[in-house]
Length: 632
Image (cartoon, rainbow, N blue to C red):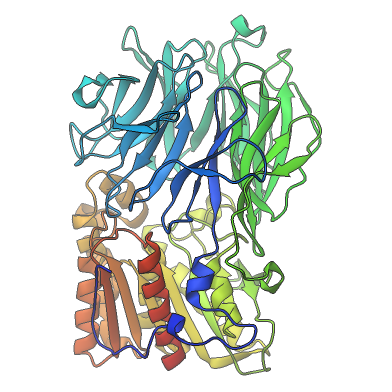
């Protein structure tokens, strides 16, 4: 299993118990499958996608909706993406080892099934940048030259390892956004933080690296796609569509067109109160799908740019999709259809194909629900909780099907990031606890994305603990709810959410009956000192710098306030975590235990930042269930 545990003793795995009528074990829930990450093959008749039938995501292909899919990879490690060549029956996929996030790129020749490791630098990260239009080359960024920065590489489809050409030496976090339609240039994004980026164009012949978005302050420029060119019959010129919040009066993201010749930025779609979150664009036809994030729900718009003006387009009927949360659009070669994944509270993730002109969708994958009737899945309600300063904190609240007034235990599940957002998507773990009689609350505390730049910045550096106060306000709201037992409120969270759990237990000890910290930050100083060097600058932009803010970071670190913890604590981590090193778990468990806190630990030697292997997930969530049953 590859794990090691600390006190307290287990009371027995849930999967070993005989479930009563209408209840299901954690093994069953964790065997609810997901299919996602779709990519159309070059002929448009075959899809690849990722599915976790074996316990970890592998590459599968499918030639028609609902048929039995064919598994293409057979590894014990997870696949991170798969992308078809535009011209040949081959695809590239990414795979790391033991959760270390140092993904290598592999080419799968689909017909014989032969697989080739293309990168062969196991100590470096490789971030996919897409195929050239002729399928002869692909691009990626990697930190193989310097662990702290990402360079741009171009590699022939049959080349391996050091045969890749270093085409640009970076000086920060570089990501590729796609090849120009004539394959002469690459769009490059440089991130300074999650709320501050720049765009560049890299000319592959001359090596020129042109800065497209000079700006002051924090401005987001991302999700960039090349516009169709004049050679394709398009009249608007050479430019880029992107999502940005540029502008003094702008708080949310909008869709814009950037003219590369003039540098002018033109609004195409104003997001209004909600963010435009991205655009998928076919650079031959001008057909597109853009999305808006409306309080966690996805609104899709399908259309086609006409070429008369950059902002001129026509729209097609909205897709008829289940669930409410969708993404990962991939057009077929003619842009007559697109594939995407969709999910919802009561809908496990599957791949659908949508007809562009009609909006009619067809479900291609049939990821099973492990024999659990979907009608038993519970749907959440969107609620808003007033925090200490009057801020309205949104969250998703779900009650179990059967409960007794005033006696229902509740899990407050706080997302990571912190610039992430909890959405009403399917969670087997949440449905498992609901089936066991727990209520579930998922807040989007200040600092979450999806609610505008101002909301996302309300927890920056010296305002960090205001987000912890939001979690406390949610616990108090729950304590007043007629269904909830105020003495049975548990805090649960992973990564930054793990910090939120620990900080909630140290700052508001009277509110919580127990805490579950998964791969969480216990000490901001040691976290920043030991996190992957490629991440440190980005994380300091959010949390504060070691050089200038060390004293403040120490003051808010749960490890330095551990004496106030009263609730039992369960700490889980992956030995290979490159983001939040396992030392964070070890030090908080040791310090809390010395203070007399009931502490249990579970460390997986073959996992990283979270748990991807099915056997580890079963062990982890069985143990969490036992812990909560005992203490909540």
